[in-house]
Image (cartoon, rainbow, N blue to C red):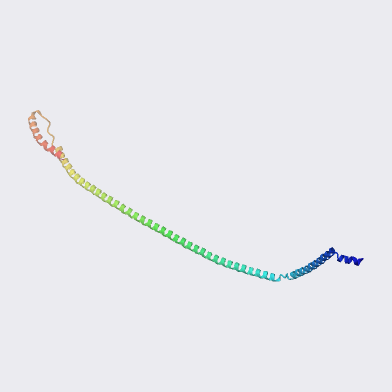
Length: 220
């Protein structure tokens, strides 16, 4: 019965299809297992091949090269900075030296200007003093000349006055002499009736002598 059933199953189309499906599934599982094993092997090989020593060496080389270049750049920058600083210092020193020379030159010019101004002022004062002395001397000379002229005029006037006074003194003396003569003349006698005729004759004689006396007084 069992054999009959088995044969019967072989002859059954459904049974055949199931067997085929089972075979295919088994083959697929085997294939998947094989692929899994291959994949695991590849994973193992891949993991085993993950050696970073070369990369670390390359990284170290890159870092060293980077540090070398950075050091070179920094050294060049430091050298350039030193050169620039020296250049700037030289420029500052040159500017300071130029300013010092300019200050000295300005001070020299100022001192020279002051000396020139002082010399000019001194010359002007000397010239003014000279003009003052000249003008003063001119005024003194002119005044002395005028004073000498006045003194001369006064001397001449006094001399002329002295001469005139001498003449007047002589005239006064002459007048006094004549007056004394007149005063010393004898007085006439007192009147007398017996001599009226004689007195009249005497008066006529005196009247003739009076004009001469009057003339003498007026000329004095």
